Length: 510
Image (cartoon, rainbow, N blue to C red; front, side, top):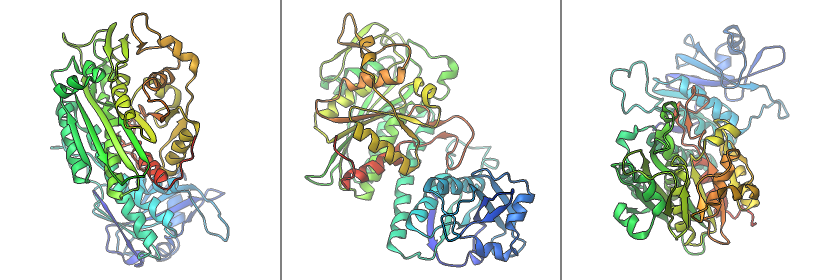
């Protein structure tokens, strides 16, 4: 993983391979160089803005222009990244929100792949700006290269080290911001890596093994249940989904203990290592990115390791049911009735609605510990993409205050999430003629129906929320900002922020 260090050195004299400055578009089509880049612009005789315009930069957010320094700076290359339209915060100092800074820095980092050392002469006058620029740089400096052999030259490695110029590199708040950025982004990259691994190399047992190793390295207690332990305990949803695969399911439990009296956060994540749809087989094109169907499990495991490394004052218990959903002679069938952990029976009308079955096991078990807050995270429905698109998750909850707190944590972290309802009238469509509930409901409102199904398994009196991250967990389009193509690590940052809010007592009661 790349690193960020703080420095008060002059940007023009930094011993780096490239130097990043920010620009913004002003009325009339011109540009202005943003705070942090003034000295660099002066060294280039004030010509950065006019050069960027002459090169055809349209002034769109995250648009990058590469300029030669012509010896004016130690770095041979100047990268001007546009933050969009110029904003005046008073007294002539432009001010940009954290996410604008994150995305612009991330775009510059991606554009500099193959460059070892990069200087950042961007707005960094406050700890919030230092945090945003650091996070954006680290998030943008990512590449999954495990399987690259003959294509390494045209798929260059990410930036190795960033030097962020700030007036107060020794300020405690600035140093803490950089340290937090390293910890959180390391967790995001962990989740990205796991999502990107081909499913042939990441069956449930292997994902469980990797989760255990990551947790132990962070000082988190781990328990792994194999298929025999799952059967003995009665985890019928997870076992049923895994019946069709030759590679049996697992359940991973992580426990981070901050101490008695601290808030208790329970996390449950869907870990379907590959989803063919089972006997309710998906079309081939819909399977192409189903290695990402364990994105929820990856997110909660990675977030738990970050929470532990940050030493947050919140107790965390994470449950990750893992299975491979495959068609075979041993697979569960539509109209089968299975028994979820705790005794509720489910008529399985569609084997491609499998995520809610493994989550039900985890939610019931997590509820037994009576947590203060229970959150499940899952790449659950295609209906999420229909409703909210590929970049925005849906947040459903049995508690409006909790739902609001999660959306606020997401906004603060730079992840897009939107509050969604749980209309009670949709529940009747899941009535079964032979079991307690069916795993399918109305054709319309599928994301909400799935949320209502999960709500049935939440323990009485427990504040619960469901995050459907089906689209945002995997970027199947072109890279953008700090987001790569492939696994994104979505929800990790929101969960860490929410844990921080819980520890600080900033999540309001119902």
